[in-house]
Image (cartoon, rainbow, N blue to C red):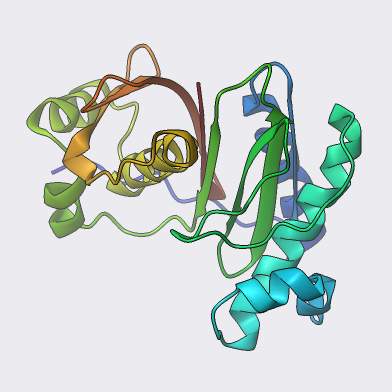
Length: 221
């Protein structure tokens, strides 16, 4: 059984947001920008009319998170020389990124985040954010190959299975908009030492992960 992450003491809310923002920016690949903040009441009002119409009926808390993440992405477009646009939901659940842009949105129940980059620099990006939870052996059996189990437990780099889950989620989000291939967890093989991944059809992806206060994973190719 893999050892859990050492418990951390949660800092004050404003400091936690600043720490996570710093960690996110430190993981970004060259040519990408990112932002993170706490989800606030009324963030659902940040959705444009087109975005609201494209989203399935959801409880207010989910629309609030979607509004926060999309607003962050629109603010980031200027940093890479693109105009802000509606980020409507496409079939399959991914946002429709504007021409010349790639990116990813993520949120848990407290924080929303976005990363964007130019498509002439990056082929795709994926982002995931998760709470740190106690290890789940049933989840480990679902998401980890025998090789990944050994690298997690023997090397200690990826102790919690939730970290591996988050990395694979980020990899899927990075490749699916371009490749249009649905992937199960065992269709993605994670290499801990090189911080890379390979899909079952040969797409190679780089990733970075942080597990301070929240698990955050970014993947790109």
